[in-house]
Length: 450
Image 1 (tube, rainbow, N blue to C red):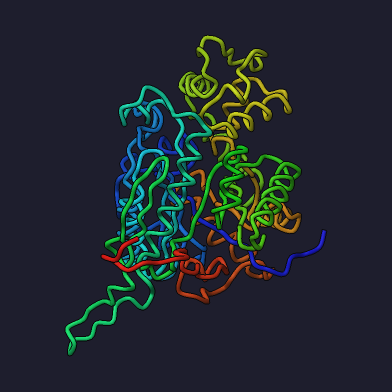
Image 2: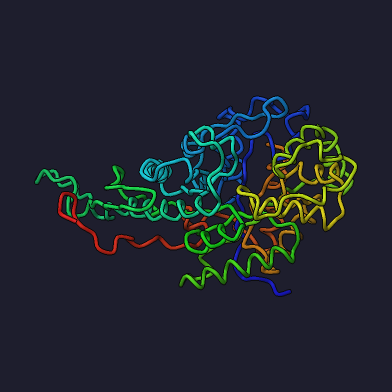
């Protein structure tokens, strides 16, 4: 396996007091931290100390999980990231927002504003949102069909990118003597009329410092991969094995080329949950301690909801039922559903064992070991053309992030695999990605006829 010349990309995926569902029950954890901005400011500074590419925040327009069993509240990502922009200088700021339950104008404005506030460090993780709970918050009885959600997302991105480009980079002239602030010929309507949206434009925010915020996508279904190949500049994915990760990596790069894109312009970033100890025994004990705190009955109900079956159909000490729905019958989280079923079948796990495997990362790869072993695992996938980097998902926060930054990152730096200093000012600089050109092929001035 040859060593790649380029550097790794590493994001800090921040989730409350950690990604393990029982992390909040540890003596060290603050059960109120999920909505404490100081907690997140501290995490942001730790991640920036490690020269990580970005912070990453997940989100859903609905309550995630049972608030009786684990912290369920979370702050809106663009609001929280605006606060974190003021607490940091370099690190990127990626927030999740749904194309299913937002409008392009409002969302384009929010991310353009974040990009201006942060000096060009904003990224948008684009999701289509599965789950009936979220749908019912917007007047729907159930999740819209999978294919329709991605068709809406595609048009959503067309509108958003044109809105970001509705001001040219040189539109503002600020000529005090002439009394002209902006050249109106360079502030342009978009006059979009499509299946899902009608948007006149222009945006009421000038073109963002990055041109467009970095476009990130999370989803590995066929529709998700087709969408990513067209739009995404970074893809957050869940893969359990090196072989699966290599296949996904090769497939998505090939799809990007089919769209006329440079395959280096789309970064593949699997999630990894590193359970780190100074010795293997210490790391394994931390993993056991966390797993002991999982509520198996609660976790069984969550699993049953994903499978769309009754929790009574799941025997904690037996295998998954043979008659689970097929992927085609699942309208939400198709790729995660398939990953979990295949994991259980491949490794012949009982439901209880599966719950333990999912407790740390909800289907993302969990790796338990010393700092050197974690660094080796990261390098193996990187050099094996299975990843361009990783979304680091500490099982416990802040201690898990501190362990990664202070013990794993220095090893990767010593090996020449990761930056020792930031060399650019924007998130696109961190990823080595170009600033997008103006997407309005035939612009027209504000107030002029279309």
